[in-house]
Image (cartoon, rainbow, N blue to C red; front, side, top):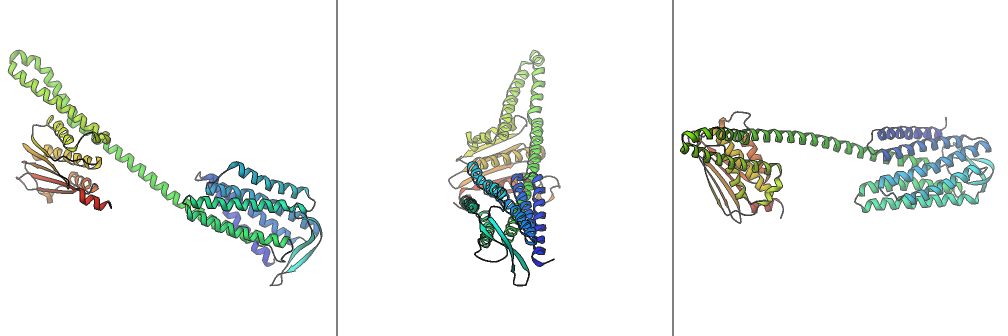
Length: 457
């Protein structure tokens, strides 16, 4: 086998492999239209190269004309698929214009099939041989050009103008790398095709080189599409993982809210129901004790309402915009007082406007700290003070409980770590000091100046 057909067979194999690969990718429903159009384009190029091999091997005029007509027809079909691929790739899809451009190729296809010798020649007298530099001869026709070949040049020029304009639109849209890669592959493609047209017109005597342009187009765009595909698959995995983590977070939050409802509101309502059920009997025996029960019932009711408001705010953080931080903390403390025999002294000074994120973190840390005091500290008195000014805001929570050794916290107790993470999220400083038998102090400070510097303002 001579050199040129051997090289062309290799080219054909590459195009066949790439075409089947992208058809397989299209079946995976990830950008199916784009990969389908590119895969079909590659398969048409594969057929085109096989027809070119047949043309080189033609030994008489009839065989040459048949191979030439098939080659031209495949070239027009490839032009149609390439045009649609460019439109899908650049996302520039004026359907009516695309159909008009396709019509030019279909006219060329029709002329090529109707004409006895194809669209390029009206008559072929004989075949001659052109020797290549290494001595291999290739077949070249001698004949008269067909005047209708102008339709072929019109179709080619129109489609080339559209393709490069689509690249320009894509570049202007911000997809610069993708547009430049497509423009480069198209430039090589169009340049080799134009060289073949000069061979057809007899301006130069050489072998056809369009197949090299076709191959460069196939290889360059395939590598780029596969790279984009890998990035898309990676992004999809990240989205799936993010969705999985989001669902876990939602489930954990639901469990926490259900636990809070059980620990606070449900127990408070149970206590209220018990007191309400016993009050009529107590009232008959001792009205003074019954009056104390009524006072306790009213306190529990107010606490349950406050606790429910706190839970609603947690479910809908946008509600934080309605109230300043000091009022939110007082509402939070009111809900806790409704379910705990604990004296909480609240001080609010200089309550300044804050973002929702900052208010939410201060509320959540206060809630976590007070819950820990109720469960573990055995405290009878707690001081909660909030001081704000133009520079920032400081929250201080002090209890008179049993305290603990910070270095001996059992594993699995994540409350303090979670509070630190919340503070770091808004750029605040969290400090905790505690000693056995001396209570615990928590200080949370947030500086407006530091956060402005951190955000680049």
